[in-house]
Length: 460
Ligand SMILES: Nc1ncnc2c1ncn2[C@@H]1O[C@H](COP(=O)(O)OP(=O)(O)OP(=O)(O)O)[C@@H](O)[C@H]1O
Ligand SMILES: O=P(O)(O)O[C@@H]1[C@H](O)[C@H](O)[C@@H](OP(=O)(O)O)[C@H](OP(=O)(O)O)[C@H]1O
Image (tube, rainbow, N blue to C red):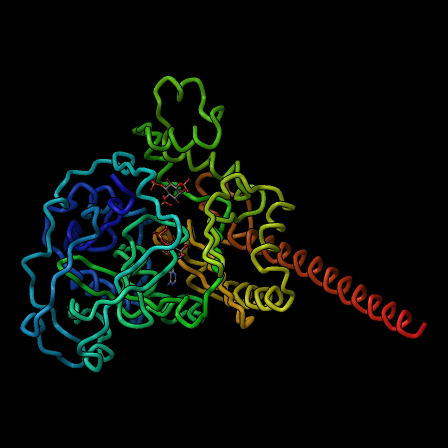
């Protein structure tokens, strides 16, 4: 089963009346048994916002965990929306007509453990993909929408958008109206975006335009960060020293579920990776695989790792699993910026801004940030930006608890090493900048020398 099947969607969201504070285990067990739609999610987010405004606790009492999702592998079929599918706008927000397609039959699987939900290699996205881009029919109405809307597009207006997805799994993204994309709904991520609305990190995360339902499937509607670039170069760096939640570790200990797909992925990289026991069972548990990934890459040693790169010439690489040493990472970055000192400096200054914002961010203090990436984008105009993306596994801490993000992780302290990783990332780019500047200086001196020699030669 592909990874997108682990994301909780409107189709299988087993929300009970007590809402967000309930344990994930219960949510998993009830997954798919109730008919909940985007409205429910949005309502919950509104409750959080309201409780925040009244000073009531805004974060969950218990640690939040990755959510389980059962969705169709295809990501849901689309149909042409009719005007009558729309409900009237009330106070600027649209009420959604209850759809008969809000619950998927695939959403009714009884899910006991995250490790039951296997993904496979084929489901992993590997770069440039074509998203269906749909222009709005009712663009005016569209822009008024703040929270939940019906799909306001006509199939007849389809056009293709070449887009790059450097990490994650196939089918997680769809094109939306111009300049925006849709990402499969996850509760964690929605809650994060809602909380980020009032946070110091807001300028560094993609614009979030609420949830959107299409054919009973729920999506997060956000800005496409690539839109203002001309043939962008893109790099995804996964941040932190740990890429799995403590909860996943506990669960794997309680109910170890060796996964053959992870064993196969491990074997593809290193046939000596699996232990004799893992070889004999032809299976590896998720945390064990994730820890192994962290060890062979720079996650453990530098607090970040390169996941993928797409260059403006159309080439795309996601084979960085063993890119581990500082020197190798510097080399990859240098190649990514094409030896361009200006772009490197732009990236450095943006990273420093992000670092400052993280240090003042209340959201950051109160969340364990796992699996989030920094997305680097630049083009030939020397425009260069860095964005914080992917909050699918970013989890609120219990009320009153905070993290420092730059101390060692020990099971139980939930530290993620994000700031330490960022510090190392900044050092990496500083090294790139120094090397690039030295090379530029060398080149200009060499050119001057050449000129002098030419002049001397001419003068003779
Ligand atoms: N707002 C955005 N604008 C442009 N590209 C994006 C945006 N969000 C994500 N991407 C692209 O999609 C890729 C995957 O994004 P993201 O990490 O959010 O997905 P995911 O499925 O949650 O990944 P994972 O499974 O690793 O957690 C990124 O590497 C990037 O290439
Ligand atoms: O990069 P790789 O080597 O392909 O390994 C995947 C990667 O670590 C993803 O981050 C992880 O998803 P999450 O971060 O969402 O846990 C996924 O788990 P999955 O197979 O359970 O989807 C792994 O298989």
